[in-house]
Length: 541
Image (cartoon, rainbow, N blue to C red; front, side):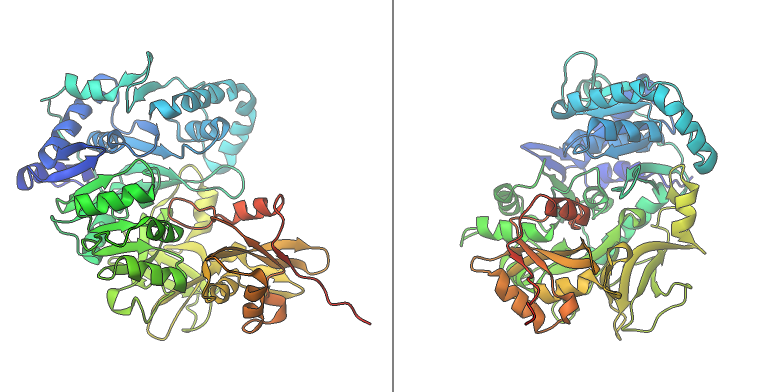
């Protein structure tokens, strides 16, 4: 009997690629046989600890091998994992633990105190939340139980009270547990998006979604058993688990995992492990360039996936990886990572485009009535296909709003060119409304990014007592960038109302794990920072 269970790939790999590297981390190595054996043992141990099919297990951790081992063991059992952002506060984590109704939680020593505080917070706030939760359940379908009593698992050894997963693997080594037979709709994990208001939404990703994403990544990136990917993107995000993430094991390749991004460690890994591909946020490119020596051997790299790269950073990437395919990509948590990739033949001529739809998905650009807009015109990007999530956990209202007539509405503004290549223009919510005019922050960003000394830029709306909103820009520049010259550059290409009214020169832009700039954080930064240039209204005689 066939199954959609993604863990089923491990047994075949243990035979076909038995002694080849599967996972590398800080001097530790797993062959494909060893990876399968450890997952088998861990699955048996989890069963002994009471984990059953459809149980939900939260993971609060940075990148460690046991994160991946646990996710695969849970998949094998038909259980669900809930990866959570360790940068959240205890109160924020508590909300998500309750919303996901987890039965167990796993963490590392670094975040043990945070996780304990979150569990305590979740239990202590139950009395206060009961009335509100009951009202919410009526309108959204969510449920609330009693205080959380969860099993505590340690991905790395923690003091008493935590079940050590490494010890559990050794205890049950040699045990075998059959893969639970699952269909495509079986829930694989719940991934929480960054909420703009209220509780973040829990995106449901199924085994079918993950399988089809793996297929798409293999085809699009040409993955093969000899490939070795470098993975420092957080595993709590689809950038770490799905870009291509699990997909490298789908073909019997190797993942070199790093706990976090460090430019020197990235360079060492590329050279010593002969890395062939990686995902890198745009601003990381220049950090790696500044760290790289003239004799750095990066010739093994076949492809690099990034997003929101300026012309200056594209040149940096070409300098670093002259033989590699440089892939501008676009995707969301709701689409299990990539929706589109820019093909190698057009990475120079279509720079700025996010390319064409990956296999097995359809992408359209539509107006407010759902009609396709002509090439060269803006509209909302919508998508459908077997790698698109079925919806948000216990939130039918938000699900109905985003999934309409069989299509997922991304909330992003895009346009196709005459050749069918997609360009992302803005978020619908990031349109700037100034003096009766609507403008795209992305249009302004593209103009500023053409300045030869600009490495990265983001434009947000700032409130204004007369014009309602005005654009302000946050810029990472090369040495010598003068805000006044940037404004002059903008005035040559934009109408006056579109020229930023404030310029902030910064060392970095806040981003989420996929490299998308967090504009909400920039708006908060503006409230406490002093601009490096401010528009002064000309005085009339």
